[in-house]
Image 1 (cartoon, rainbow, N blue to C red):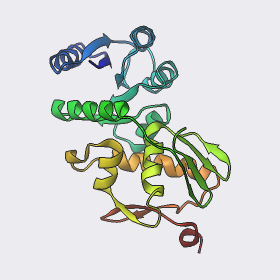
Image 2 (cartoon, one colour):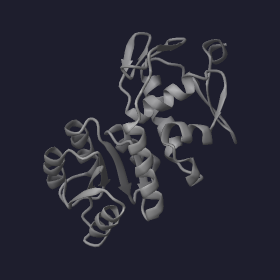
Image 3 (spheres, rainbow, N blue to C red):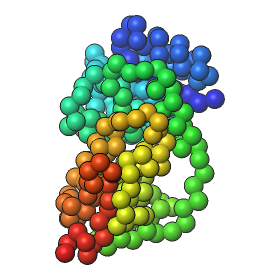
Image 4 (cartoon, rainbow, N blue to C red):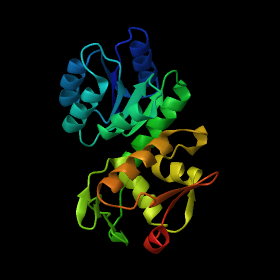
Amino acid sequence: MARVLVVEDDPVIGPELESALTVAGYRTDLAATGARALDLGGAVMPDLVLLDLGLPDDDGVTVCRRMRAVLPQAVIVVLTARTEEFEVVVALDAGADDYLTKPFRLTELLARLRAHLRRQAAPRDDDRTLKVGRLSLDLPARRAYVAGDEVALRPKEFDLLTALASRAGEVVSREELMDEVWDVNWFGPTKTLDVHVFALRRKLIDHGEDPQRIATVRGRGYRYELPETAEG
């Protein structure tokens, strides 16, 4: 039975989420402040954290960063009323794996949790290194390098880069990427993929990669450009 830590200060939403998750079969813990969340996180070691960004005692992004340090293997899903893309990117950079904007549907939340936990528990059989131009992915170690310089990637960023680089030169549809990386393509349109692509591009550029390496193919998806294509 997976354990979920709910970090939500709203006196109505917090208990309702805790109750719904308990009914769905999860062991749950509820924290209304960042400080309490960090204490509980270290004590109960949850498999997944639902983290509201609007906390009364600390900035949710700061709590996310500290939570990631305490729980390196846990899935962190941010719940936020903030819709600006850069704010979501900041949360992802701080260690979040996914996010949902309020208001959200309980059915969608539960489906996402199931998908994340399924992928977390799935055995990995990666036994190779994937190389495309200056990019090198150590799949067993889940580490990425550009020209030998390691790029610090969050788990979903690594999965996304692997999905694109393994099919370099091909267009990978949004639906395929959502299914392969998040296993939640049935939810329809979502900005989760776009935000992760934005963050991934920025990190690759910071390590000297071509800004056009991950190309947007409008109406279809994304393509990891082969070196001779992107540079020629």
